Image (cartoon, rainbow, N blue to C red; front, side):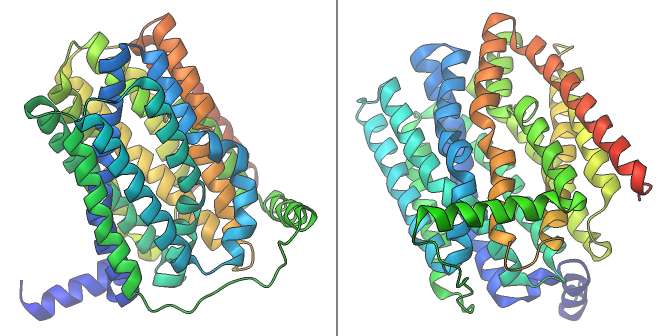
Length: 414
């Protein structure tokens, strides 16, 4: 492909990358999220090695997302109030330091289960602000016209990392140990912090006062009322909350299913996660290349239903190859659902409320994880990971069908 043809292809299918600010930020993210996935896999396997308990793995995930569950709504006013670039530099630096601490105590063989719980909670506190700020910052980097493309490309980066990160982590764990996963994650933050330091964006911030609890609560109430008045935001947000609670507990389901029902080692677990990442990356690239049409209700609600059905079927079988295929389908549908939901609610939001809307998004996408993780870990421990997956897929499928019926009352699907 010639240089001119390549530029034409990029402009047509990946217009967000033509924006210098988004391109720099995205490249930094591509490096950083590989490290994040390596740490996620390493942490899950470390907990299983230390405790051998699916329930205790669920507790770690619950603790990490507890701040998001309890405080997400209160983070929104602060996200709208302060410039997002400076906020992200602070949060990304904090996450790098926490990764270094986990790497050090693991390398020195000092790590204990309670230490992982403490660090998970601290990581959760930082992510409480970091996650919705990153989501709301994308539209400032790429513009409204390119938002769907930018969201899809972020998903592509995240899921390319889901392919590379778990595979590398599995090989590292099997070959030399878990600690390198955390060291490499800490190092990866240098890329995104460096990218943020070079961005040139206007410091968009709200003038709304948040200098008292009354002012913060008033801002939270206004944001919730804003969402409630808009069905195009409310229905996808509610469905995301239910599916996140029951189905998107992959950090619990996949390692316990791999170890208990399939009898796999860390390498096998890593490649199960890689299969899910391949499906997710395929979906993200497909969405990016079709982003000129905007978010689709069919991909949103159909993605939710397909994801739940794939997880249900995965729990009913015991073949390693078929598990990889079904998890790949689940990954594809998960990204179709989540990216379409993200773009839909951002485009339906104005600049004044976007931070608060995305803090609610963070609540329903990640904030319900403590409850979901406890549910997934407890049910997996009491029955089996396979049965827990099938039950969860069935519950999510019911929620997706109900949402589709609600949408069809007002207008047909795309």
